[in-house]
Image 1: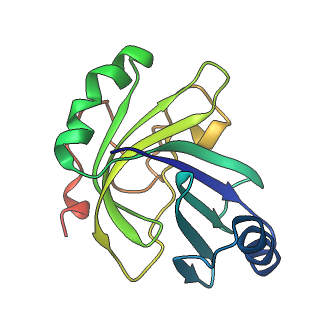
Image 2: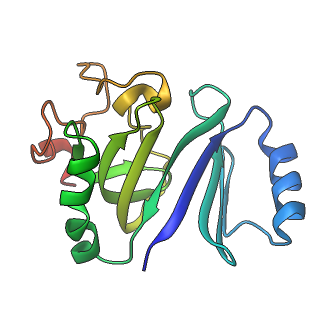
Length: 162
């Protein structure tokens, strides 16, 4: 089953946590010094906020899926929506390691479709794919996180297979 994912970059994490926990009527499921996440059931959404190096506002949208099979099953649909789809495997980000696909809509909004493999003790690296809405062209920078593939559908770099 899919869960809508929304990630918002914020300036003041504490004030944003207070606002969203009041808005949602629920405490965050995950709270870190730079990140918070709510796993809401009504509506079914993974809502995250962070203070990580991105412009304030909507960072990206997406779908979280429950299984690897469900993720792989969405591949053709995502590639049909954006032929420049980027695949990442075992990407460390947001205190989790995930397999994911990234596409961008015509206005430049990044969409992440992912399956979480497990938690990790650090935030990891923001994926620079599409600059989170600042570009409709995939980012291919040597300074980017090690796991961003140089071409779509390429397997993850060896540094991510930890």
